[in-house]
Length: 398
Image (cartoon, rainbow, N blue to C red; front, top):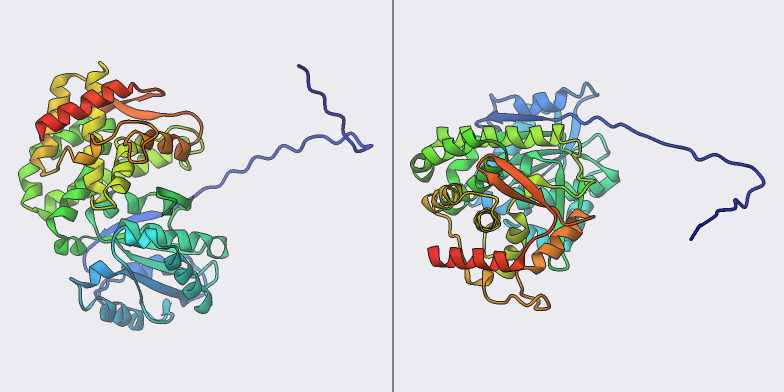
């Protein structure tokens, strides 16, 4: 069948071809004592814009952080007074609920938008988001959608946020029972990682962020995986120097991928950095977010690694190394929600996560699996029966 198009205009108008290149630049800083009065880093980052000073800012803090850092709001206020020639803190410090609750309540987004409007912020003002990955995601989405984008400075306070989610270009909230259904691609103005915040994390949150480091190591850097493997004891005993090295290398690999992949805003169907995530996002939902994101990612890594073995892509020796390292770090590799129901029409079927993952990617299903430790391979179709076998293996190892 041949389709023809007859222009209605009497003029023969040529198609206008448009191509726009946009360069983004942002720095990820590492420090301790960010709000100490003798630490000028935050003020320097804002002053570096070379614009008229002071600049208006609002601050949103993760409520979970305040349970351990009782003087943080006073420290922020004092810092604003010390550097008032650079920063004008507008209004009181706002407090957002901790964890995934920040992304599950759309009223919080409206509240942040209202705070931005009442503070009279413009596109050259700043929103300072201080907290874990979920709070950064929600506040980042609010900043990206107010005035079509207000400058966001992320101050991540968990391992996972400092090495992964807080240094990337995405934000979002959950909707319709789906992870990150609403969101944008919007790079931050800057990221300020303060290692002191990590000292107050409980063991679950300390460990959870290591799952994202393992993820990027498994698909990109065998030596990094071997470093994590060799330092399991130091990680579980909360050696801060080892964790700082892991955070730095993980953030570095993440940023390199964004800069060099050719698809920083994921316009195609490929998303290598989401290795293990199709199952992770689904399991978070199935457990009503009882699982931390990093804990779900660890299970997703175990599942996709074992599937890679069953599919003939990955050696059993490499698969065992991965599973043993996850277990040595203290991660659970199997939960009942993985094996309860496998009928595609069942609303609690784990494998509905594959459809949701494809929808979120766009285009065809594209999963990152493993050929060997440090080397990923993308596939566009999977065998559900082999996935069920992989689940059985993990159940037996539990």
